[in-house]
Image 1: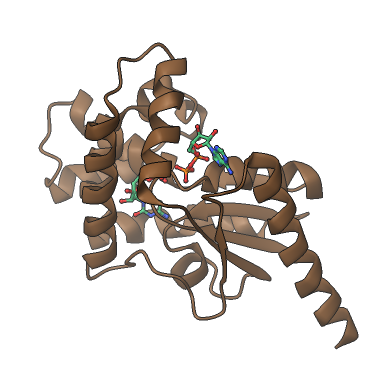
Image 2: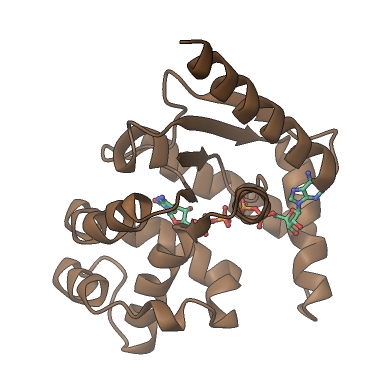
Length: 212
Ligand SMILES: Nc1ncnc2c1ncn2[C@@H]1O[C@H](COP(=O)(O)OP(=O)(O)O)[C@@H](O)[C@H]1O
Ligand SMILES: Nc1ccn([C@@H]2O[C@H](COP(=O)(O)OP(=O)(O)O)[C@@H](O)[C@H]2O)c(=O)n1
C-alpha cells in the first residue's frame, strides 16, 4: 500500500507520515528533506539558488545518508528548498528516487507537496493535511525553540505564508490537493488525534475496497 500525504508548510505531514509508517510497518520518506538538501548543497558551495545547472547537479548527487543533517531543518533551508523546488529540471532529476522509494515493498508513506498529484497519482490513500497558518506558525516556533533556536513567531508565520504562496502558484507540481484526496484539518487536534483521524480514513478506504 502507498499512502500519500501532502499539505502546506508545517501542517504536520512529517509527524503524521512517520507515525503512520510505524503503525503499518511501512517505510517513510519526507520528500521536503530532498529539496532542503539540494538547497543546502548550493548554499554550501556558494551557488545561487536559481542556478539551474548547479541545482540539477546537486539533485543528481544527493546522498540520502545526509538527510538527517540538522542544518536541513532551518528556516533558511526551507526557504531555499522552496526556490530550488520550482525548477522543473530539479524536480525531474528527483522523480525516480521518490517513485522507487514508493514502489519498494512492503509499502510506503511519502509526504510532500505533489505526492498525490505527481509522484504517486495511483496511491492507495491520499491525505491532504491542513491547519490554520497561525497554529502552524506557533507549532513550528515551539519546535525551533525546543532545538535551542531563537525563533520569532511572526517571522515564522511570514515565512510559512510566503512559501505556501510560492508553492501554490508555481507552474510545475503546485501545492494542491489531488481530486481524490481526503482533507484532514488538525488545527484543533493534538498529534494523537491527527493520527487517529488519518487511520480512520485509511481503514475506511481499505474497507470500501475489500467490499469491492
Ligand atoms: N496535530 C498536531 N498537534 C500539535 N502539534 C503538531 C501536530 N502535528 C504536528 N505537530 C507539530 O507541528 C510541528 C510541524 O510538524 P511537522 O510534522 O514537522 O510538519 P510538516 O512536515 O508538515 O512540516 C512539529 O513541531 C510537530 O511536532
Ligand atoms: N514534495 C515536495 C516537498 C517539498 N517541496 C518544497 O520544499 C520546501 C520544503 O518542504 P518541507 O516539507 O520540508 O517544508 P515544511 O512543511 O516541513 O516546512 C517546500 O516549501 C516546497 O517548496 C516540494 O516542492 N515538493
